[in-house]
Image (cartoon, rainbow, N blue to C red; front, side, top):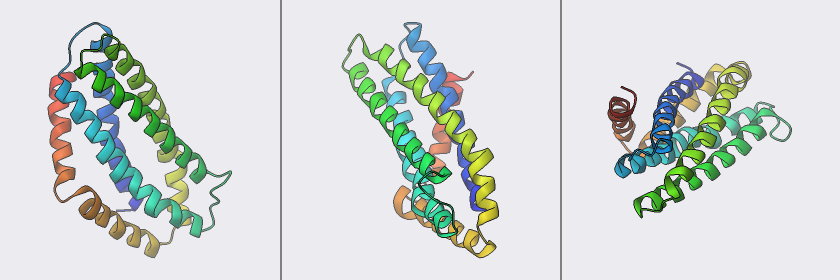
Amino acid sequence: MKPTDQLKKEHEAILLLLRVLDKVAARLEAGERVDATDLDRMLEFIRIFADRCHHGKEETFLFPALEEAGMPREGGPVGVMLQEHDQGRRYVEALSKAVAGYQADDPEAAASFAASARSYIQHLTQHIEKENHILFPMADRFLSDGKQKALLNAFDRIEEEVVGKGKHEEFHLLLDHLSEVYLK
């Protein structure tokens, strides 16, 4: 397995969460109530699985390896991906504020959450497409077999030291639960 294969597999989980988020936004737009605990758990997934784990692997190891192999940051795909990660974090902050408002029964919070969710979904879906179809094929060509093996080992360290042992599996169980509730 290549490091980019692992990242693509994580993209599949993130895209599943985005499908759930889309259904949640639709329910909120229709005036339906949504379990606030589920909203918190979605944010936890985004912050830990998508950002700290997935983006952490890219920002801490993959992107520097690509730069070391000769891919420029400024004016290149790495710089674009970093900017998009920052933009995604701004959407997540907006989602977080909306969840806090929703839990406090702010009448505007549901609409705010739905709008922020829609923006985040569109942003991250396009971002994932760019990584899967442009950046990752470039990475596969740029990086030697030895470097790719080293990246996989580094990715394992992120899973254990940053995310926590067993947390990845917990997130997949969460996705199963959310899919059952919102995608059926």
